[in-house]
Length: 440
Image (cartoon, rainbow, N blue to C red):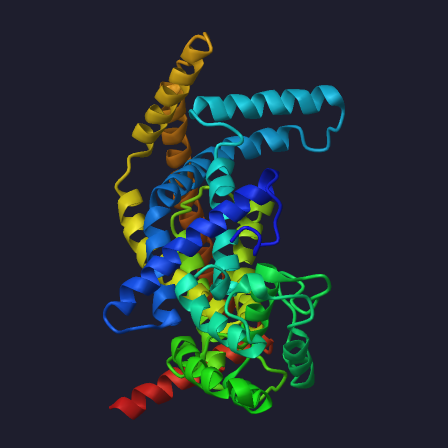
């Protein structure tokens, strides 16, 4: 399997390959499970796969959003520090700003890199997920077996070890003649010096790119293997078909004529937009909406769905289906998480964070931080200040409305004869008199 990944067993490459292999085993287990009930469908396996991953990553999701809510509480203080040193670029000012910012994080029992840990854990998992979904036969042995049967029929061999260099040239020529897209994470079309298991995997990569009509052409082009091709291609087409959409093909096939596969990227964009809105609902910030952070969060409401739309049009439909399933499940999950987070007392959360931070300080031989009371007091002050500002703003608006109303009435009442105001006043009085006579 690791050779098939074309990744070396060094550093991050080995870790990524290991994660991909685990994800592939989970996917294979789900496919085998549904097969017990006579259902061999990659689309259903992808949805179940997404559900399992979401459940496994739920603790990290909750922790990450707790950190985001805490950051929203801290933001006014951090912003005040940034404003204090705005425009100062000397080393002393920058050093003081960093020290004061670090002190705010310590006061709330967190760190400047606290929110990065969850992302660092989730990122390689997400990348591995896309790698597995992008090329399912590489990781799901139950699916790969159907493709390998075709490989053996095309080459006249009985095992991958018997494949020699050049045995896939006829398949490669067929793919070239039929405009099969030989692009992907690996160089699918480069077979120079490839043999054995590696060559078998390359051939599976090529076969996985074929659409239903190209499978028919393949059977016609290789009459000696046509019966095997027809039997296995029918099974492969059935596995790849989800609501009439072939998951191995891309929704955008070069034509701007809509087809059913377009529903996948459209639903991906819509579900991503709604999911982002739900996540933003947890960010009950007290910060100015015009600052850079708030503007960046707003822009994500539009850029993320557009990114989803673009990639799901250009990636295989299987990736788009995972994207849709992930966003829909994220929406359902987010509703539950929002309800859970709404019941969390922020003062208690701060105290818990400070307690955890003090345990770490104790292991290092450092004295505990006595700052939880200051932090919660600051939180109450920020909330009270926000409420006062909102009340003052509403009162100011009402006063302005009353002043405008009184000024307009006075101006119309005392308008000079012949002026526009006097004429407007006469028209208003005429209309009022006419309306009264009409209603008698």
